[in-house]
Amino acid sequence: MAAKRSGAESKGSGRRGASPQSGQEPRSEPPLSLERIVATAVELLDAEGVDGLKMRRLADRLGAGAMSLYWHVGNKEEVFDLALDSVLEYRGPPDIDESGDWRGDVVHILEDWRASMLRHPWSASLLPRRALGPNILIRLELLSKTLSGAGVTDADLNVAIWSLWNYVIGATITRANFDLSDDDRAAAQQRLTGLSEHYPTIERSRLLLDNDWDGAFRKGLDFLLDGLAPRQ
Amino acid sequence: MAAKRSGAESKGSGRRGASPQSGQEPRSEPPLSLERIVATAVELLDAEGVDGLKMRRLADRLGAGAMSLYWHVGNKEEVFDLALDSVLEYRGPPDIDESGDWRGDVVHILEDWRASMLRHPWSASLLPRRALGPNILIRLELLSKTLSGAGVTDADLNVAIWSLWNYVIGATITRANFDLSDDDRAAAQQRLTGLSEHYPTIERSRLLLDNDWDGAFRKGLDFLLDGLAPRQ
DNA sequence: ATACGACTCGTACGGCGTACGATTAAATTG
DNA sequence: CAATTTAATCGTACGCCGTACGAGTCGTAT
Image (cartoon, rainbow over all chains, first blue to last red; front, side):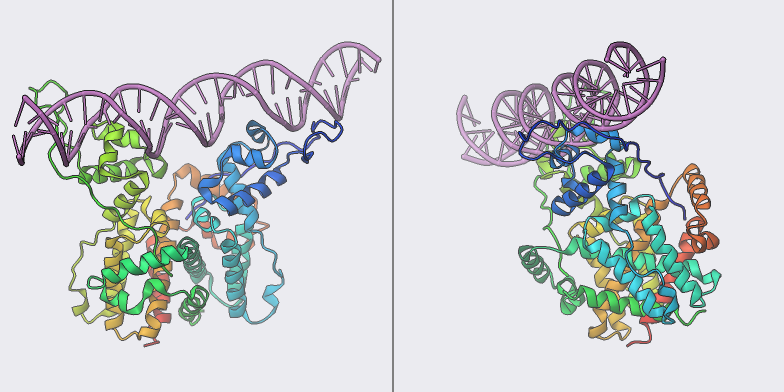
């Protein structure tokens, strides 16, 4: 298992030239910067989704010309990388490995990670397809350290981490993409019910109508940890 | 949890007008049909990836004009839906629930599903973002039936299915996207090693360089099933 | 013959990412 | 102070995209 594409080097940091004429324009925008670009890209992604991020629209929101962005970023892909990494920043306590409750710590780490991604529903789908940025590596390091400190052997460590990664990624992508309007829900129910003779078990368990995402995530995670824990 | 978008109705099925002149053109293409379009779309996706599928290129491969496709499909999204569903067709034995080895059956179902997606690396990323087509519903029904027949209670069934879904989806998307050239691998190793002071545990376990994807998938799945199994 | 439905496709439009080079303002140098 | 260099902005234009629209071609039914 290996990582992809390299990172993103920032380029500029000097001063700029928003004309300091007396207040004629509606609002004198602050100067462009990588930070403003990334923050605005996240806003735009939150509001319009992955397909809604266009370089022209991003520039509009920043009060800049479209081509001005390219002084600060190399291309559109880099905007995605930076927005994704910014959204994955870990703001929790770093002293998590002192609590003694390693299982609670793992649950906390993974629920916090999932919550960060669900706050920005475009992020989960992006994560496995891009290079691993520093912030996701910090989270993985914290997870590794916690498991390792809990007595998981080096031989089992990678399998444990990848299993948890797979589970969180799959759960979060699925949740983020199945979050629909009520109309869609009604249509889905309609469609499934009409086909119930072909899918009797699914229909009976109302698999597609189950709305307790958080509970299902937690229960499944507990099962996985049950399987992982006895091995040390 | 609910499903998205509705399906895709086929439209045409009559005859057409490839001029039956004596063999002047290099090759007299067979007529357009939904089947040919979908099969060629899968070929193109396999060869060029998700971003490589363009309506014009698809039409070129079919020896047709770009706009001719729109007689058979409503738009490009429908091509993705149809290609995805076609790739998920289940060709295994339907009498799987007779073997008595429910756990072996579950492993077989999930490994077959994963293998189908890895044969078409663009498919896994697409699956959670589209409506559930008939072929993936067939697989979910088979999985549900097997678990239910193994004594999993209705109360636990949905959690079990979604946990397995999450794991398979996460594992397959990750695997499909981390499948890189040797150059990329070298670059990843380089990058990680240079940063090893920040990520000591990850670096020590060589997490990102582990290449045993199939083994890791199977071991993690075993752990998850260990956790799921005691509850009946 | 005529009409019609099934099917194909050329043209064109608006929107996209971005290459290129002109422009301007600030910083640096003499 | 003037001259030069550097950092940053942005207008224009190009090639490519999905696809709306409507005209054209054919086999068949009347």
